[in-house]
Length: 224
Image (tube, rainbow, N blue to C red; front, top):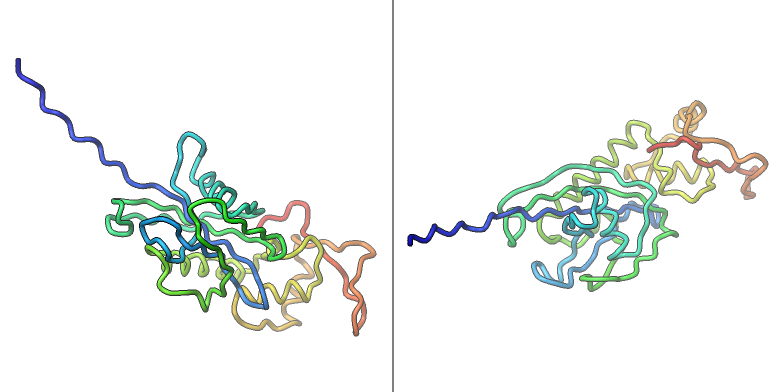
């Protein structure tokens, strides 16, 4: 009896989601990095991420949200897909496909509790991050920063980086931190006058040395 030749196991790509989680601290754009607790690249800093688990993830956005939830105890209000990266050499485990997302979170809402496969977490300015990051995460982070800045340059308001109520000065400072440059106050305020994304909080102001500053919030149908 002739034995049929055995078939080689099908080689599947390693599929994952990585997240550039942004916030603003000390007037600068920061990103949350994790120190890897396992090989490959053990001990190196990286963007948080997770491998696709078809049994629990409806899609790769679900994978990204699970990575933030399980590794860092973070829930985000805004998550946006940036790009898809693939290749033979980006991960020593074999051919890999990664979908990159970025997320926005007010700094005072972050509770980065280490859960699994992570040695440490650190908020770091995007311009002063440790280098190199694990795998190709330097390139992924640069791509996410560019996408975020391009969107704010096109007059999208990054309200997810602010508390529920804020002044226009606080909003301008957040936009400046994202863009890495100062904005003309008069031009910025004139643009906001017709913005459908903002609404005044009636009767609520912040008292200061100058006249009271009106408080605002995101409109009910706001989308970044």
